[in-house]
Each structure stands twice: as C-alpha cells, then as structure tokens.
Length: 165
View 1 (tube, rainbow, N blue to C red):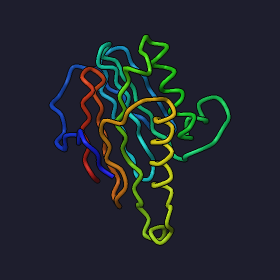
View 2 (cartoon, rainbow, N blue to C red):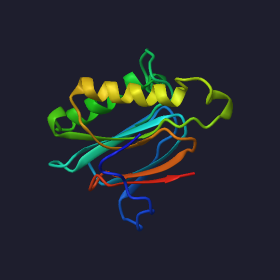
View 3 (spheres, rainbow, N blue to C red):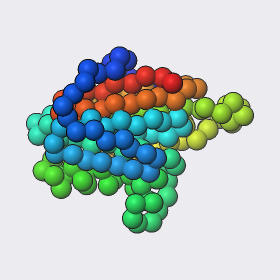
View 4 (cartoon, rainbow, N blue to C red):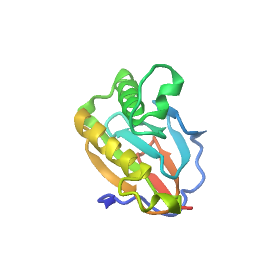
C-alpha cells in the first residue's frame, strides 16, 4: 500500500541533528532535532510528528499484538504505538496535532507469499487500526511488497526518506 504524501527516495543531505538507530523493538520520541534511522522488512516503523511543536518520534515493531510491560513489550505494535503516542503527549503534543507515516510490512520470505495474511500485512493492518483508534491520520505510507526498506525520519521537519533494500 502506498498513500499520499509519498516520502522522498533519495537520502537526505548531512545534518547537524543528533542521530539514533532504532533496532527491532525500540522506540524514541524526541523534543530536539533528531534523525532516526531504521531498517524494516516485515516489521513496521511508525513515525509521528507534531508540526506545531516540531517534535516527533518513531518505533520499530516486530509483531502486531502482544502484552507485557518494559522494553520487551515494544516488540508488539499495539504497545509500541500506544507508548510512542503517550511519549509525545507527555512532551506537550496532542493526539489532534500528530500525523503518522507508516513503513514496512513486506513479505521478504518467498515461502510466506502463499499465505494470504503474511506477517507483514498483519503488522501493517495493526498499525493502521491502532492509529485509527488513536485518532491520528496516516499522511504517508509505503507498506507491503517483497523488499525491506531503509527509513530515515527527521524530527525537525517531519520529512521521511525511504529506500527499498
């Protein structure tokens, strides 16, 4: 699925912003300009941005649903999205001002293509459903397909660069 607001496909120029790499099961919300990078296959990365406050954050989750508390719970989309939203709200944002960009959800293993609802599709649907419940619009997405993606999200201006890998 690819919706409006398609992200740029060329890597951004060098920046003086802080940088962070998100591993699977991690999340970061930042009130200072930060360039967040991650690589997703069947996983999903949700990037949230508040244009008024110019703050944002992203997550990288592996599975659509799960429970628990602590850092390990961020592996699950329902937990990772809720915690990302709460982190940005705690930093002064409101749900009404947040906009989402969603990436990943590929089927990178041929054997799983024959299954109608492979993990990548279930992850993408979980992200869409969670953001709908939170009342946060998805302004851009690049999900599905058969290849992973490298994502670079700049919390200073909300720009996202994506490249298939």
